[in-house]
Image (spheres, one colour):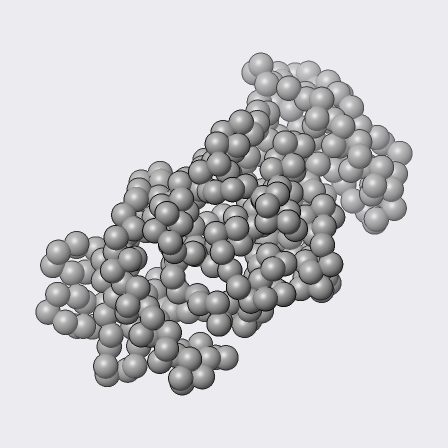
Length: 344
């Protein structure tokens, strides 16, 4: 599908709320990604016109934000024929973190790498007086083992509440956004904290725990992150880190993405459990001294749960801890949390 003599659109490789994404080629950059930006369902014709003009005016800023942890923007071009914009960016062959988030909890060592890379990318964006406004797994992409922030500049303050509501990311909006509709660098850090929480727990856990919550009201009521449910293997420093990033008081959050990255460097990544989560039970595994440590949490009902921890190697299996008589969910999680906290 020819676009100009320099750019050709290929197969559609993704579909998001703001755009369809195509593979493309041009004679300068070779293989590229092309986002075909469109008017949003809740956006009036005048709002779309205003946003198009703002995006075109912002193109130079987007192109100037060159950093190894920011998806590079090559061009933003108006398509007169169909009233759309074509955002031409570098092609990230690793895709976004959305599929990893949907697959299940990620290892904390991988999440720390992602966190550090995203902080450095956001620092680049913020120092150019830009705000992302839409940090989430789907907007973090991977290319050559680098994680990059993408799609910054696509959401405006006038659209952020409507977009987050329609796209299901209201808990990525800090309380001040719900109250005033205004974003800042601090609201990006709140959204990054929520993103890290999602990556650590996976989509299924998140959906089960948050599906019936009135998110805007819960966020505005305060202490939102203090009431999070946690998978029991998540270390306490990680929990404190996310609570700080999502503090109700902006002055109590991290000052900048860079200071956030500095704190992230001290977060523990060992022991690094592989977690396979399911609604009726979860399994954790890791290697220690040539033996596999396996922890199994089985859920018959909220009041009938058992768990066991075993060391497996050769022909011998050794029981490390657990409960064989069913206990309540609270007791099971408390026991698991204590076991993981003591493991090394």
